[in-house]
Amino acid sequence: MKFRKTTIINNQLIAPGVYLLYFNRWFDFIPGQVVSIRINSEMAGRLYSICSSNKSKVVQILYKVREEGLLTPLLSNLKKGDVVEVSEPFGDFIHQNNQSVFIATGTGIAPFMSMILSGQKLPEMVIYGISYNKYLHFNKTIVDVIGSSNFIKCVTKELVNGTFNGRVTDYINSINNLKNIKYYLCGNPNMVVDTRDLLIKKGVSFNNIMSEIYF
Amino acid sequence: MSLEPLLGKTLTELQQIVTNLGLPKFAGKQIAQWLYQKDITEIEQMTNLSKVAREKLSQNYCFGTSAHSKVDTSVDGTKKYLYPTSNDNFIESAYIPDKERATLCVSSQVGCKMGCLFCMTARMGFNGHLSAGDIINQVRSLPERQNLTNIVYMGMGEPLDNLEQVLKSIEIFTADWGFAMSPRRITLSTIGIIPAMKEFLERSQAHLAVSLHSPFEQERKQMMPIESVYSFKQVLEVIRDFDFGLQRRVSFEYIMFDGVNDSSKHAMELVKVLKGIKCRMNLIKFHPIPDSPLKGTPFNKMVEFEQILKKNGIMTTIRSSRGEDIFAACGLLSTKEKSKK
Image (cartoon, rainbow over all chains, first blue to last red; front, side, top):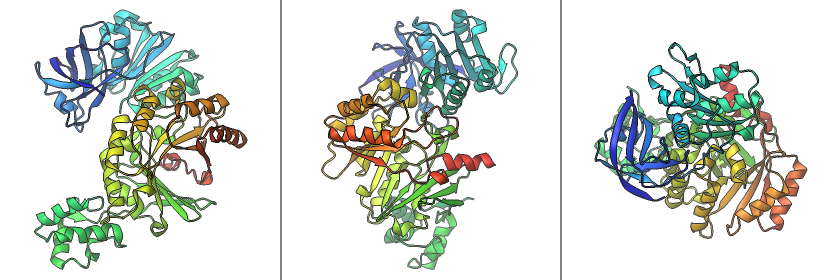
């Protein structure tokens, strides 16, 4: 894997513990791909989905600080002008430009933002699971593009007007007659596995479910 | 104050501990021998250490073994041991005796993050990494430890997602001050996390097994999300480029799913993609899991598949199914146990 020293141009706190890291794009990529990021060659890289358009000159990486993590606490201290090592993009969690539904939790929204902002075929629906409304990232952008009725926000730990109170799986369970179209899942492994099992139970073929897991 | 377990410490770490306690450096090796080569379970039983040394050790450390909480025995002799963890979960180890060979299948994580469609452990979610001590304990506390000939990292969890602790446990299993096992008696099974796989190949001598399950990228991706990040073709490239020497072995695991990955087309594609790799192929009967869209391939079809691979030069075996009556496939027992709670 080839890494290149890359200068940070911004590291913006967008919600408690959640940041958008910006650097100038020096590679081409397909929306849905990941890069490996490390502070230096002494440490193992960690994988992050690219969150921005493949036409933008600036790459955005969405990350949440994990206190026990090796990299994110260091990333959160970076400032404009600091240098990290970034790999060439890779991976194959690619939208096939078919009829689809995007399902994400937390920072798992990142590859879908890249797909939406890059002008790929829009999903019929985006289902987004978060714990608190303060973690609702990119609300305006998604609503502007697919309409508020097609953006389902599932908030688990507080009641918020205009959102579904419960988990992503609770919402899917409440839908009758799910379409057997492509479902793209991204986020924490528990959500991905539970949602995949539920979709299959509700009649979606397993070969219509594409998953990306954050590990 | 909770005591830190000594089990799982390397010789270097033990020497550091005794030095810090003002004890002679050779006491580190004596402790290692008690931990890994003898049959005691208390620091007080380390009788070649002075009483003062044992008292000093006991102030901050405990021995670190913990017995299994449950065992199920299959009619075929396979035993599944269950070890409780601190956060109300369970890990499993499967002891599989087979003529002169006795294998222990160890877990490396509590649950798993990888989300493979056919895996019961994936449904548990991920609840943490095991420490080297937790991994070692599965062997150290095994009642049949004296009969054990082989260890396979094929239990719960993806071992290469917990690389440092897994490598540390392999060091302890293979060191002369540890269990003194040959690394050729140890196999690590992975879905193919490439950077960690490279490190494992460089830093250990144990065998490698890769879970393949399909020679077609799109199909593998539907069953194994890792394919979206590290494709099996890249994994094979790494394997092709690595010098395994004469003794070290690479094998591929292939669970057979009826009507999904068991056609002659699949077999011929396997022959194509594995060309140039000296390897073994293990065809595995699928242990059905509840509500799975996948079903196991009938045995006669597995034999046909095996014949195609063999005719084309791939050393292939159909792994006999063991312990089905006790839910021996990884994750089945612990999920069953947890759901009782």
